[in-house]
Length: 231
Image (cartoon, rainbow, N blue to C red; front, side):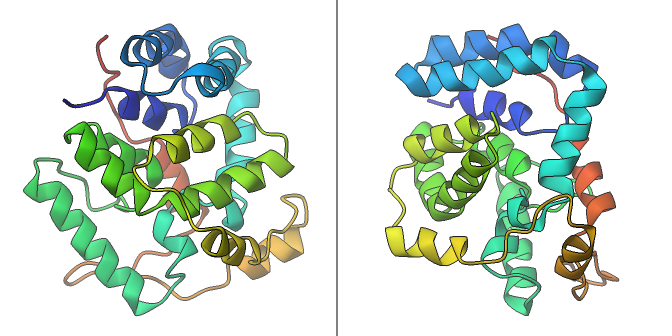
């Protein structure tokens, strides 16, 4: 069994567009029909669905950029939180990209394979048990992101909490605590944000000239074209 729920959650974590607003009701239907996200968790996710469906698109986009593109501690690039700019991250990128392609998900050269919406898109193509196991490997990162979003009273917290609940294994408290000890600057503190982004480039492909994991790359990643799953 493959779960469209992962695709729906992927779209909710993607850069808001008018098309996403138009398809919001379909995302709600998918979550309700598959029952993978249940109870209060689904109710909380549905609040975000409603905000996206009825909010001003420019306000939604500004909020998304402020959270996920401007604030490194809220990066939706998973390896950012465990490898930083080390060489280990480059190899992890190569391995994950190869796994995608082996199983039929081709990505463009401009896309970073550890981008969470892309990772969830891949999980939507895999059997549910396998998807849960892979999600469990990232549950400490997802839990830390959810906690940081909670502190900001962001409705996006609901999606991260739902993913942790779906994962086949729970995160260890000490792993989450270690991530939460990392700097978490105020998005309005431009000096702190600039300092957080002053890192070396990341090269993760043969012959790559490097790819700075910065604002422009992240916004482009958020604009990955993706068809909304059919209920």
